Image 1 (tube, rainbow, N blue to C red):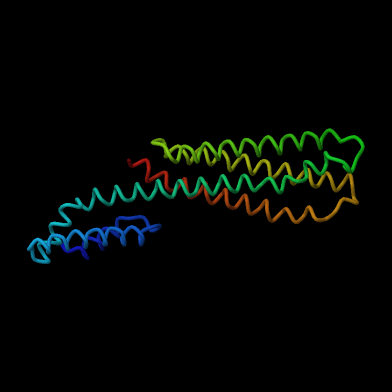
Image 2 (cartoon, one colour; image 1 turned 180 degrees about the horizontal axis):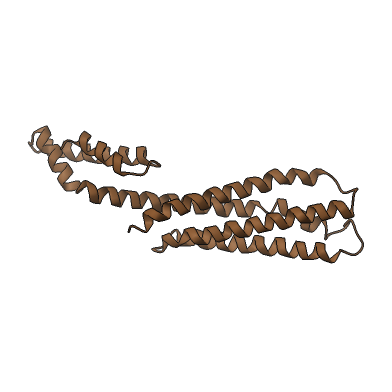
Length: 212
């Protein structure tokens, strides 16, 4: 088998994401190894065969490289989720807006207070889950990052719902409230989409990690 044939077969066994980068790195390594053998007097065919023999059976190599790629992508996804959850602090502006002077009411309605507490607690829980998933991604328990990150997604979604209801309640009780809060809706949606994408991606990579 030549290096070109080896790389073609390896490409069929690797996940689509990161495949080009992995093949480029493997190809460079194999060609360098073959060049060292040709410098030692072997023919090009024999040198490539020796380089492939040193590199290992294609089944073992493909499994190892897929696992390494899954771990790398899990770490990236969990880091993205942590950033998205942290950025969600901006949609939560409604909490201090309804607490600090000049608040739209002299005495805060009980339902508004409860909604604020729920929104903040769920956001903090999402932050904890996201941070734990990111930490797990750097340990031998990387496969556990996915379910923890899904919990973070559920928590941030709950916080978004509570915040939306809070804003609606605010407008009902204080019709003169400024309309600029509506600008935070795209931010909240962006955070949810980012967390959802990170959770889904990590979940898909978990299948690779479970093969380890």
